[in-house]
Image 1 (cartoon, helix red, strand yellow):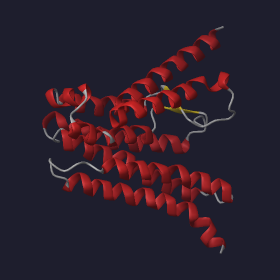
Image 2: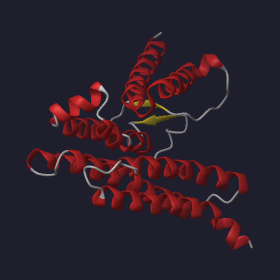
Image 3: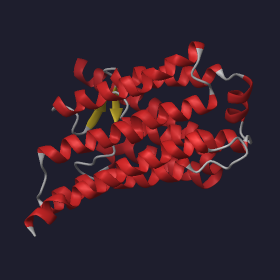
Image 4: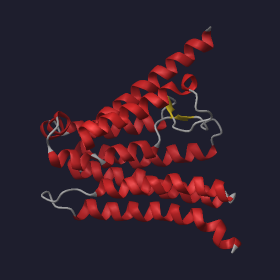
Length: 236
């Protein structure tokens, strides 16, 4: 029984990995007329990714094995899969090979996170999960072609490569990014988290999947503002 208890969190982690592989298969096999479903896989995988750590802490069975499995699963679902999604919109040829920076920087970002002890309340660089969730919405946004963002991707496909390079840099950059981990629930110390959550929910209610680029823009803007505020407070 103790062996089963120790490995319950790992089942969620392996579920995350399995969904990532299934999502890659979906991206490869989907035709241009098929409605994309990859975002469903990624949203569920992100839920499993959240659950594995929470369950491990609740059962008091955190382990080094679980930490390593979590990173390996995240690399597949939120590192390798996004590269396939980008490549499904802009073919991996010529400048498109820059898309390979996504899994490379994802691996570096996850390795740095594993050996870092200063990312408990905020992230250094954008997390692979946040990036993966954003990228998973691109196929359905592009397929529906109803938003200016989708139309710009269609008219200027190099935007896709630009996003891949930009987020690859962000993953390994020293810029502090907002984490939704709460030490306390007071508004004063968590204003940026509540702003992100409330604005994100409002945008999803209004724009559905087309909210993703706006939510990402707000996330980046709030993270930059938070960095400036902390720098100003440190200099006072």
